[in-house]
Image (cartoon, rainbow, N blue to C red; front, side, top):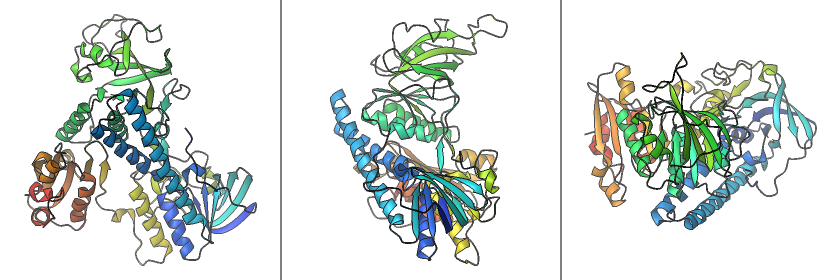
Length: 538
C-alpha cells in the first residue's frame, strides 16, 4: 500500500556527474545524522534514497513510530470500548490509520528538509549501485546520475525476510508489517506467521482493535530465548487479549480463498487425528480453528477455544501424514494438515540486510555468511573508505544502534585520539510494545545459568507497585539477575507498564558498574513505576 509523500518534494536538479566529499546511500538514522554533522563541518554530501516515501528512514516511515502510533490508538480503542462492535472498530481503525499517516508524513517532510535545505547537502531520490571502489550510479526518474565520492557510507537498512512458501508473493491479502500498517479497512481475522517480538506487537495491537488474531509458531516453544516464567506471562497476557496460538505449525502453501480471503495450508506436527480431505479440495464447511484443534490429543499445539466459531481463522480438511512405510500413523503421526481461512496474513519472520542491487562486488565490499555487509569494530567494510551503518551491517536492529553507529563513524572522521567502537557499546536494552510493555537488558536467568555464573534471582509482581494500581495496570512481573558475591547487576526483565522508560535506569546503573544496592537505596519520586526498583533489588 502506498504512503503519502511530503508536499513539494521532488528530485533536485543536478548535473549528470557529481564529485563530492561523502556519499551516503540510504536516509536512515545513522546516515542522516552523519550527513548533518559532515555538512556542519563544511563537507559536501550527497544522500541517495531509493524512495521518496522513505525520507528519514525505516523508523519514522514503516517502523517504530507508525507502529507505536497505531498501538496507542488500539489501546485507546480498547479502553473506550470502541473495539466492541464492527462499526466502532472500523471507525477507530480508520481514525488510527489517518493519524498514523499524518504523523509519518509530517516527520518525513521535516527529515527531508532538515538535510535538503542545507547548502552542503544534495538529496537524490533514486536507487544507487556501485560501479567502482569510489563511484556509484544513481538511477533517478530523470535518468542516471554518476557520483564519485572520497568516502562512502552504506545505510540501506533491512527488509522483511519472506519465507519460501508457494503463493506467498502472489496471493492478495498477504502483507509484511509495512503493508499491514497502511490498510484502509481493518481485517476481521488475521493470521500472523511468526511469533517473534514484531509479530507479537502486531498481534497485541490488532487484538486491541478487535481483530481475531491467530499466531502460527513453527516450533513448540514460545519465545525460546526468554525465561520460561517471563514467556508464560507474556503469552498469558496475549491470550487474555484474545490472541490464539498454534504451535508446531508449518505453513506449506498460501492461496486465495473462495470467499475473497486467504487460505493457508498448515502442517502441524504431533497431532493425532484421522485423515480427511486434502487442503486443495473444495472447502467443506467451517469451524473455529482452535475448537477443532482442541479435539486433538496433543494439547501443546492449542489454546482454549473461542466462544464465537466465526471469530478466528476457520479451519477444515484435516489430513494425517503417512509413515515412511506408507501405512497411516494414528498414534503418533508426523504431522496433520489443516486449512486456515482468514482475511489477512502478516509475514513476520524477521528482517534481512538490504543489499540487493547495490553491486557491492564492484567496490570490493564483502558480505558475511548471513548476508550482512562485513564490518570491523569501527564499521569499516572490506573496501577502503567505505563504511556500513545501521541494520545493513548485521548488528542489533534498533534505531538507537544506528545512532550509535553514527558515533562510531564520526569519531574516526573528527580526529578523535581514541575512536568510539562497537566494543564500547554496553548493555543494549530492548522494549516490545505489547499491551503490557516488555523490556529487558543484559542477561536473563537462562543465559546466566548457561554462563556458569553464581547469581540470585530477584522478583516482584507488578501488582505490588502502588503506581501500577493507581494506573489500573497491575499486570506483569519484574525480574532481575544479580551476581551473588559482588552485587553486580547482570540483567533485568520488566513486563510492566512504563517498562520502556524504567529499563533505561537499570541500563545506566549497569553501564556505571553500580551494584544492585544502588537501585535498592536510590530515592525516587512517588508514586512512580521507577520506585519499584527499590523493592525489586531489595
